[in-house]
Length: 202
Image (cartoon, rainbow, N blue to C red; front, top):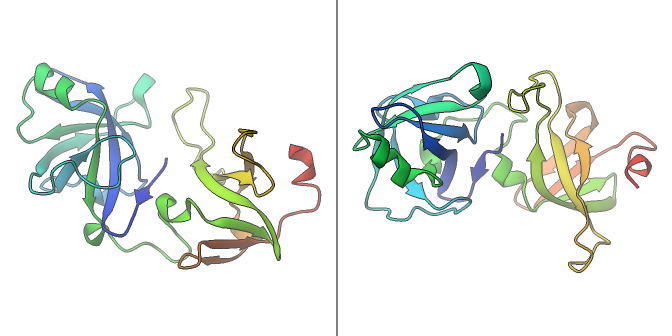
């Protein structure tokens, strides 16, 4: 589930629709961390995929959250301050929630925000392969529940592609055993990929 970050803000959830009668919202989490959803957390609204809040002077407060089961497993239900009815919730649907990057908990070693990986060039040894445009996760039969034991997949647009071609991304497992170095300041990911892996995608 994609964690979107930039220098100042991190998107933690995409609001989908109303869920319940008290203004709760069903949301797609954009981080696997649970700390950003703690009650009392201040959040800001933005357009989907935006990296800045609509109004930096206006924040909301996360009052409650829970993780549903069944058909909505893998999503999260959020209760926001000032959102107390179905109509209130519907006005917020389609937006995303941001928090200041400085408020995010420290990541474990060799762990990255997805947004920091986007735009990086992937190298197989010294050979540039392409640009990271997305990170995808293997899911269960419901199409939503993430398979925790499966490696995420880097979606790569090959360096040889042109905008006119509009190619399908190549999916490369982001396996720690294949990873040599992540140089975020220089937007460079260096891996050593098994022979034949790239050939299988052609």
